[in-house]
Image 1 (tube, rainbow, N blue to C red):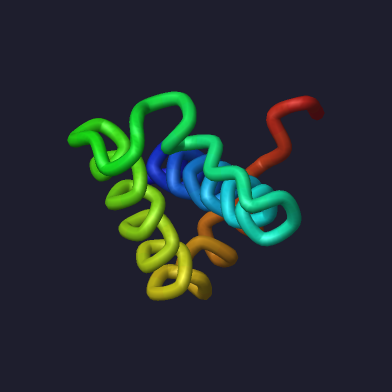
Image 2: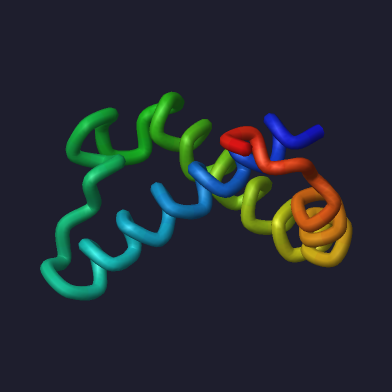
Length: 74
């Protein structure tokens, strides 16, 4: 389940960076890379949205999973 947490977090970061670029510079990186309203860009936008919902809904469960984990570097 932790791998899903990491993937969702990465997608949320990608989405946040893209929205930051849109807000600051009017530049949509996803659209620039994948095409404006292309099927692939819509998939990316959808995955980012799903990841955000997952993070919001699972917030407490994610915290429990990660706080109970043994450190991998110790």
